[in-house]
Image 1 (cartoon, rainbow, N blue to C red):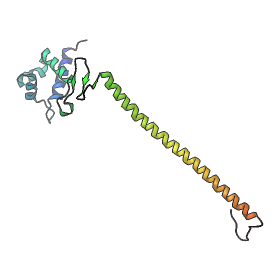
Image 2 (image 1 turned 90 degrees about the horizontal axis):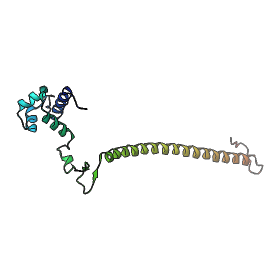
Image 3 (image 1 turned 180 degrees about the horizontal axis):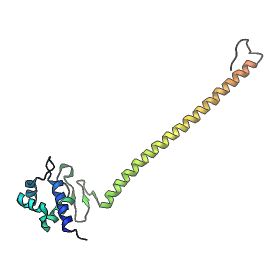
Image 4 (image 1 turned 60 degrees about the vertical axis):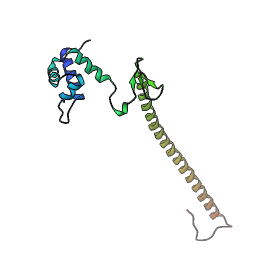
Length: 161
């Protein structure tokens, strides 16, 4: 389904604004003219809604290309449609990049779930250890009470509760 001329004009304007904006939020028509190889006045006319199909196609292609920045040096799209990296023989299809994203999310969720389970396990262990310590203390107290009742070791005035 083709875009209407109104949609195309809006997309072209948004491309100009996103790619050639100034710090004041306006369009730098000089830079846009250099990009398209035309005069700033021509770009102004195109901006008013009279952009030729060539300019629309060029704007569309520019939105899909690899950015011209240091972070992307050495990356390129091959004829196979894969994104090739500067690392030898390392390339990705769109699905593989999506998989990397979801794999990273899964790993983060897994780490959070694992940490929560480990916290619960520590609490269970702490509770078990607390119960065992109470049992040992109760055993010692019962033993001392038993010794207190013993006629051989009983001393007057000492009362263990």
